[in-house]
Amino acid sequence: MTSNVQAGPDIDPHTPRFRSGAVARLLNMPVSTLRIWERRYRVSAPPQSPSGHRLYAPADVERLLLLRELVDQGHAIGSVAHLEMPALLALSETRARLQPATAHAAPRLRTALLGLGLGRRLAGRPLLRVVHWADLASAQTQLEIAEAASADPQAADAPAVPQAALLIAEMPTLQPDSAQRLVRVMRSIGARRGIVLYAFGTEAAADVLRAAGCQLRRTPLPDAELAALIDDSSRLLAAPMPVEPPAPLAEVPPRLFDDEALSALATLSSTVACECPRHLSELVRLLGHFETYSSECSHSSPQDAALHAHLQQVSGSARAMLEAALLRVAEADGLSLPAGVAVAAAQRGGLSAAAVVVGR
Image (cartoon, rainbow, N blue to C red; front, top):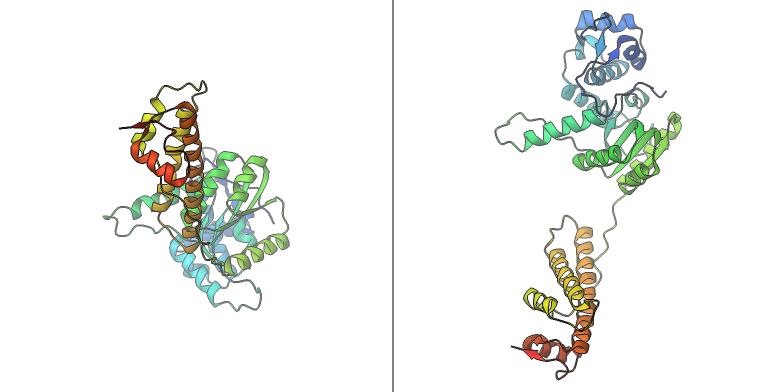
């Protein structure tokens, strides 16, 4: 069942805003049972609005959803009511690890949930749930706190940034801004794939998420289809990533022009009215810099190393082609080249040594 109670993307996760009736429907329990939990076990202490209604913050609802899930799994409410969120999540994760794998063939991966309605929908699946956020704002706030604390050497008990392979999110709307924010959440927790359920959104926002490895579906979505998406993602994430050996690099000639020579060429007077020498000099300089940058980039995996080797090869080849074009323009325009450049160009066969005036 898809809940229609969602926290807005810019709501503080600790701002009370949900009435007890809405929370009870999310928990699939009578309001009277919720009040018994509060009175007898102190599971929450919601403030009251001026009109007398109990109001719950998204963070409160996250905790209540997890408590209800653990009770459904057989835990007594009295034994778990006093636990904080990290302990509740650890307890839920432990049960998922111990559950026999016969019910679902898909591997169990560390999963982050974003959306109040997902906890109840996924309660029966053996996911290693590491975190459950009420909404996008709650996720960003908690991640920012954890990242700032982890960077502080004085914060001995800092909350760790959760790490998950899969993010499952349910959002009422999708806009390019919220899509970018969701991608940043995925990167923060290390999620390589995502499942995003949404009611309304733009195609531009959907494209951003697809490019980040997300599968998107409109709500309402039957539980069976959601389960199939999770199984597909689990299989893809569990499959070993093929490591292709780097292709042998073609010979890329060294740079003919250093930055000083290119700057000098760019400022020489030319008979070419379109200023091609200046434009070509700038392009050669930029490509040379990117070629160096690609060779210096750190490599986090064999795939990453192969990618940067390819980028270095492509940029070097493009740089050499534009150097040849610059030599041809210089020859046509009678521009002076440094002696070392002229000799190297003649040896490479790019121009006749006598065709260009050699500068000092």
